[in-house]
Length: 396
Image (tube, rainbow, N blue to C red; front, side, top):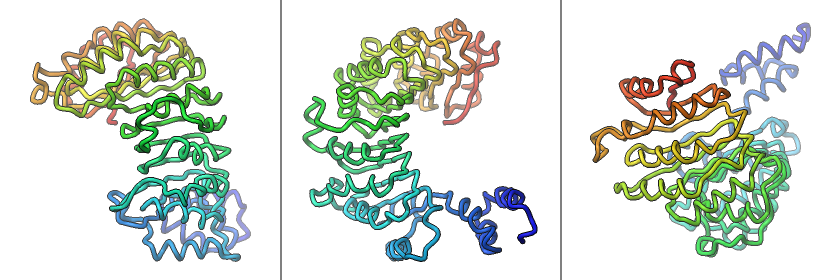
């Protein structure tokens, strides 16, 4: 096998990267083939689970985890440098000790922690708090941290997230806040985000009311250019905090996602959000924006759409703006909307004129779960954008 150039062998192996069985076979051909084969073989995240969790049924079981920990600490193992993504799922008391046992996997770049109480508390016990500071030291190359579930104080969260020196993206979806953080909105004494963070993503279950004062108090990381927020909140303080964060981010913000989710069966919730959006949100302080994605649920969501189109999007003064996207859903059909089809209540004409006045916009995306007839309806309401060929429909 040594008669073939290394570049040719690697090209052959790269072409098999989607076939795990073939890649595994390539790794057994000879030593020359092993490193490249392992690179692709371990590209898939390594899933470890301590209890059955929905959606993660293919993870390793507890006996496998014990064997993996022993193998990771073996002086003769050679696979650790190739593992670049790790998912750990289970009770909070098992997750962080296990991460410390897997410290030899020091090349992890993407770390996902899924906390499932399984009948037990999801809060960090005091005896494990020291591990929140130790885990980042064990995995210094982590660039993307996903925290799903669990209950933290903001000080605990920052001790964990802010300890990764190369952190590029922080995803919180959802994270619950401990009692002291849920009742006091003043910025706590916590470490600032690492200067390397570029993406901050907070899911709908995460109370961003605790995070926004933190960002405002410490200032935004200089590299932070992507902010994603999902919210069900109707609190004035939350919308005022979001306004202040957009002002703090200022010219560094390039990509913004705001998903306003209405879960109640009463249209009053959407109307209240629409009022606060009109009063508090502006994009005038973010001239470097290149994409804006606004997510709404058309069931009682026409008021939110109208507020975004009439009050928020017109404040855009971003000469390099490339994409505007709206998240829609066919829950807005007449069977659900008490005052008719919610899609007809969206001010498409105003959106058409707004986008037409911005020649830099090359994409108007409708992220949807719509019927084909709905696409015809929306396209017909956007004649200027359709004439420019910038209207795109794609499922979200």
